[in-house]
Length: 455
Ligand code: ARG
Image (cartoon, rainbow, N blue to C red; front, side, top):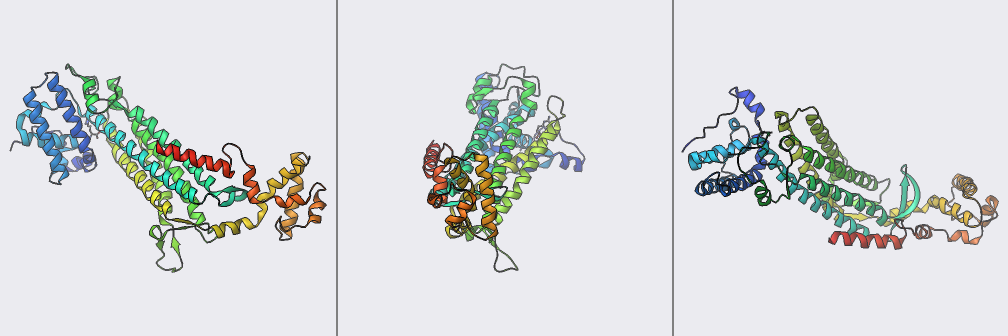
């Protein structure tokens, strides 16, 4: 067995360990090999290396891939990173011809390629997972489409809304999240090979051929930019941070709603834990963890922005720090979305408790004001009448429904018997504007959601 002539790393063992990225960048082995194979094919096509040499290299690379996948590959820290580990093994397998693989290439453009391939792939998966979560949301909304709940502002009961309307608000957020990832995909979709270390390469290469072989629609326009920017990682992490923020708000609401104070929902047994000391408790751990992990994803975004902010062009070793945050963001986002999609299927809506929360019908105050407006009172006046009426009702522990005809008349002569027609049903039905909470609008929104999910 021949050993590789590659000797790059530091001789101080501690420094070597400190500098090695192989403990984490081994995750890029598939992209690295895929990129090397496309590069090798191009080198042969351009007659920069011989066809037979390309065949030997490709065969070697494929067998290295199999070794890695079977867990038979010996990753070595002294070889620093995934590129050198694979190349060194290639030498052992096919001898000196392995030395031709790195013609017209640098680890700088190679790493940029591997990362772009990974980000593109992960965006596809992320969009798919967000979609699965949206499907669960729509199902939950559909299954409870007639449930009216208190809508909140300042976490104070404000106006009645359909639970489905509330859930579909998240559908919209996740829809925009998918679009953000999609936009980010367009900017990640540049093939950087051919940039070399920083200035381009002095060989008659065919960059478009490599781009096509690897599924890129464009080649990068500036070699310095191509090897030294990581904006596509930052964008992925920013889009992930926003998605996690949305997920975290949903998590927070589920935590509140599943508390004994609210009692609006029950999270399935499979997604909660029991307290080790207080036997009555069921803890919504999954939702709490998603809320917590959101902080971690924000951290990665802040880290990569900070790593990049003062680097002179082109490549600097600082950029090796781009990977762990990216990988962890991918894993955290994916797993959070996946577990949430599953958990949504195990949510039980407690319509009794929601109806109970609606029993004190002060959320109808705006409707009462609108009633007086319809009878000719200016809105501001109507508002102050209802403010006084509400205070009166609350101080006597009565709901609006429980107030007598006479009590209403004491506040305004405009009140008639039809004031009792104001209910949470009439309240939501009245909000029949595009984007409003009326059953008709929500039915349309559900239809639209399902149509979008079919795409
Ligand atoms: N391990 C390096 C990284 O992750 C790969 C590129 C190294 N390039 C270099 N010129 N040392 O960024």
